[in-house]
Image 1 (tube, rainbow, N blue to C red):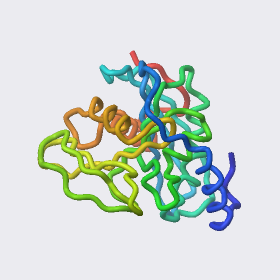
Image 2 (image 1 turned 120 degrees about the vertical axis):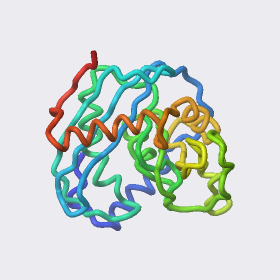
Image 3 (image 1 turned 45 degrees about the vertical axis):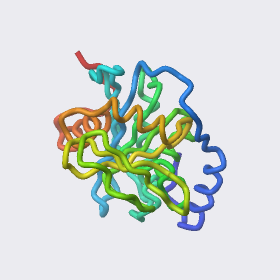
Image 4 (image 1 turned 30 degrees about the vertical axis):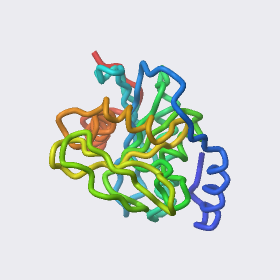
Length: 228
């Protein structure tokens, strides 16, 4: 998978093609292993650090992680970050000795101007059920959810519910959950509510974020590693 030489016009065409393959539907499978995926990079650098962490579900105990470092030439363009991130994530995915039942990505699913956030893009390519869990809104609007943990409010874009603003801790800014592939909005929110811990960011993507940062600073090494 190499997007380095694509123009924005070509990237848009790919997004529109992949969008036709997205399946938004009720979850019809059990979850024994859930994964969190995250990327770390400087927007002015060509080096991308990618990580996927596997966790038991619903205990959320880590069992393994996969780390990849990749050089990427596609530019940093909002709405097209998947073209920087997906190739490295696919490398981390291919290293996994066990594939998860569901992947949670730090980013958006269909809550994207062309319905093709990184969770949708990756989910279609890897053919894995995927959820996007983002820290900021990319498109759409919502009413502020209640201040209690677990409160939610629909995220609406062009008269369509594309996700949910979910309060993960009392009186803390919400995160934005949207299905990426083989999930629907209610199912994505139900799963993410089971992934809440002590922090604003749900455990799968929080642990992936921490693991990738340790990799970036040289404290963890590239490859597939089992925990414990």
